[in-house]
Image: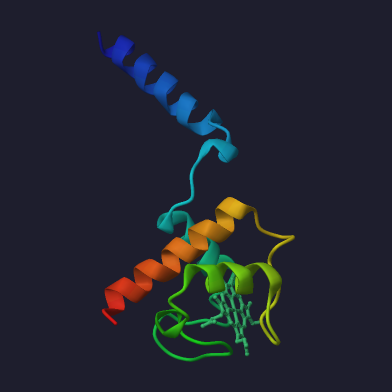
Length: 103
Ligand code: HEC
């Protein structure tokens, strides 16, 4: 019986690991991971660094999307490096930080 449970658990783990990345929808959790890797050196959550704090960024998701995709002055363009889903995840994460900052 224990063996059976173990085998089922392993099968479930394999299914999760082999799920194609493209099948996953955008999420704030993914956005946070990408932010930590690619944006944090210039953007803090709550204070100005090289660029504005996430909580002080524009509230219009379309402006966020366009700026992340095309860049602006010192802000690098990410349209060729990140997928639509990844950019959407970043927008969701920025909105979550803004909502938690309560402004
Ligand atoms: C090399 C530093 C640098 C990196 C890395 C960087 N940014 Fe920026 N970002 C800036 C600067 C500087 C600005 C202000 C642009 C301006 O002066 O108009 C900015 C502006 C922005 C804006 C516009 C904010 C507004 O209120 O309109 C967004 C959104 C943004 N960045 C998101 C991101 C995201 C998401 C990442 C990671 C994928 C990222 N940035 C990585 C420097 C950076």
